[in-house]
Image (cartoon, rainbow, N blue to C red; front, side, top):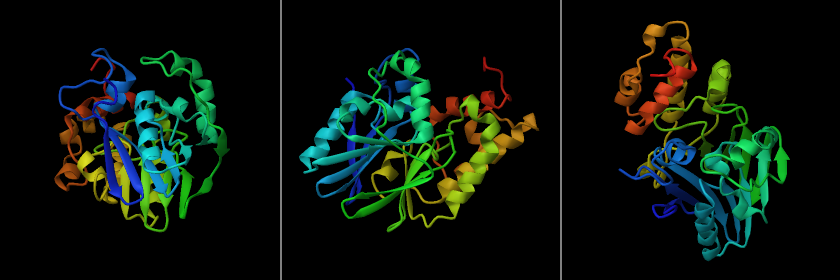
Length: 296
């Protein structure tokens, strides 16, 4: 049943991580291909909440309304009375629980709101469907500063992974909630983003200049998400992997379909951590850039 394997993690005193997936032999929705299992659950996914007293900011609403209901109940049981939501980007596995927070302010970048509106019919009739799709109630561009009790957070638009990507940064202690701009072990590349890879690299390099102390991605290693988070080697590894994808476009001999071989140096340096479920993600990336046929 959806939500049965959801884990509530407390990596920092003010931070909740609601993690599900990476459960051996388990699919949460269906044995048939679907976005919930193949794009989220098998890879492992977390939504996060920043909490100070009666105030909380939820970063993404998870993969189902069942998950979102558990999240909301957990926060309310902890004494939270005022919840706001911020969305990292428009993809299904980050907005599926919006309906549970329909009475809350839902913050999103202008591009996220536009993408949700443009894809609304597909989202509401997907597998599984997200219906009704509850839309953002507050839009921003550039940077938005939000106060969660005494904690100041910054929402930054960064075109990485998706054109509408938003990350959440807490300058006071260097905590970064990365959404899908960073994943452990590798980033997922949508075919629509192929020509934007140099932009992704430039924005990752911009992220490198921030005083980041710890990183919590939406898709990552649960043992790290439960504790210290990832360090900035995850940014370095994502840049290196993306640059190699760019190089493959002009030299197809570099396009090794085996992820562990393709990124051998990164795995050996322990900058990223091998997880077999990401092999199809890597092959998808090579297909997207035109280095493998779609039937591979």
